[in-house]
Amino acid sequence: MSEIKKKSIYDFLTAENTPIHTVRTLLLFGRNSSTYKFAFCKALMKHSAKDRILYTDLRDDFLKEFVNHYALNKNQFGGGANSLTNASDKFLESDKSAQDWDEFLIVAENNIYNNVFDAFQNVGRGEISNEHKLFEHHKSSKSIVITDKLNLILDSPTIRESISIEAESRWKVVEEAWRSKLSVNLLEYVDGEFISLDTQSNGRVNLRSAIDVLMPYQRQKCFYCNRKLNRKADSKDDDFPDVDHFFPLSQMGSTHFHGINPNGVWNLVVACKKCNRGDQGKFDMPADKLYYDKLLSRNLYFFEEHRHSLKNSILLSLNLNPSNSNAQGIVKRMRHIYNYFSVLVPWKPKEIFEP
Image (cartoon, rainbow, N blue to C red):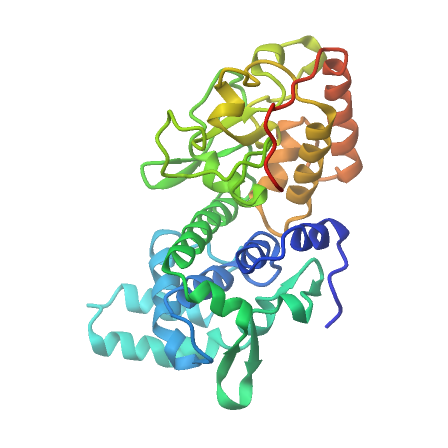
């Protein structure tokens, strides 16, 4: 397997040399079947630190994660039925007894070990390097051998819970992309499911659901000052995560931006309360070009994702055609928007934390 070919994904992976960031990169950019990826990740996070995990130790948790999602959303692969989905249908229509589960396992086991372990650590048309590896796959012993990097995660219940939450949030976004075939805008999580927002509305919308989608790209830090964000913080705390319109919503109604949806995910970042609305916060000011460059890079990450709704969200919200647009189209459109704001006095945070 060759190393990662996409420079933007490689840069994202190497921006932070921590185990949780490696897992986050795999969840965001992994190119294997997304259903298997998320189910495997969540099953893995149920284990504490150890040298080796057998297939059979992962099997039941893996399949429970899969079948629970499949029960709510049959669109788990972006494709049609297969032996696993057929077995899942049969189990879900049964009494779900211990015998029914055992019969389900007989079929399911033949489908879940073929590629998931090898493909899990592939991103950007390549494989992560040995220094970032989380495990080695030993087919002969039907097990995965855990590296020190992964054990640092498994040794911490708090980190395991955080990764599980990210995996679940990410999984729901991908499911919606498969369900709707073409997501038209930011996905909003309402009453237990994601829905697509009305692309015709340019008014303020409920954006809290965007936090779990966007924060992994920011490594759980404020987009502007790098402050570590706390999803459970009080709304008055400096580390409370706010969703911010990078280009001020109040100024995006100009005819210069006809057809562009300012509520689209392309224009949303997660900022700490202090940067967004503190005494010296950004409010309706345009941010410094440094942050425009950062936003552009993040949107290009979205564009490069595999089978992901945010790619189409970026294109449609920027009034670009998903069928024939490329990365340069995003660059050109965002540069057009930035040029309008570049003549205004830019805002920077007064306090900057370590990246």
